[in-house]
Length: 292
Image 1 (cartoon, one colour):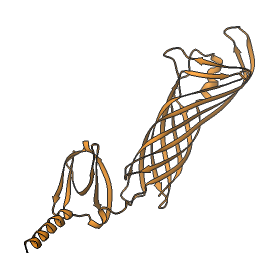
Image 2 (cartoon, one colour):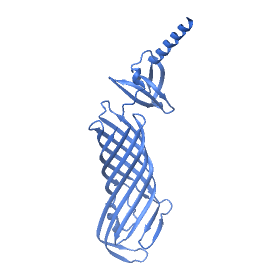
Image 3 (cartoon, helix red, strand yellow):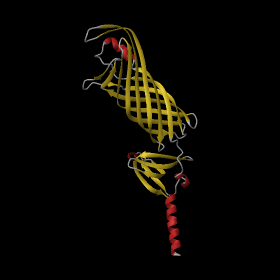
Image 4 (cartoon, rainbow, N blue to C red):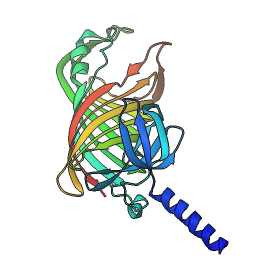
């Protein structure tokens, strides 16, 4: 008989524990009645009710003043839903295009005749694609690729070789390309009606540069370095899986060594210590994304 009472006692205790709800107090004094599913050094993961909908999210630990497991005797979140599969979309693939402009100043040491030609190459078009996997409603990882291209032709250009004092006259056509590829850390915030998704990402990857000149100057310049990028954007859901997005971003990379291909021979150009070519640029774009 005692064994039966013990079994009933522990069953009741366990049942009450399962029914218990947790308390999170934020650094702003807000109290959250929730079910904490995981506690890590940087984030606290939890489930809570928003209206009639179960939501899963997380808070940085620095935003949490205190949390108490089992603070409430009854759970607002149905127990059968606490460990059900997540309802947020885990995957996102997006394509976008728009306008971009390099923000670094033109080197004053170059020939004055080239200044306006180079300034025209500062602005151009960009195309990008990114893909991400979200392991929580707000945090994810992925990959991005972005291409910037510009082109300019200047006619009736007069250039003087500073070494030989030889004067050249003619047209110069230049095509510039910057490629950026990188792993990405995503953050996103989904509106209550799930129709608007705000996101940002940070990346550190490889940026490659290629410039092709023909006409009065005839050579191809290539270079590459480590770069980084920051993007901000918003997706407006058109239906459950398709969204129209707006985004703005900044990428950068500094070059101090170039390979010059003159057709018949190649050479390396090393800039003086402390000097570099900046690839910093700002861009805005629109695009479509698929989420599921």
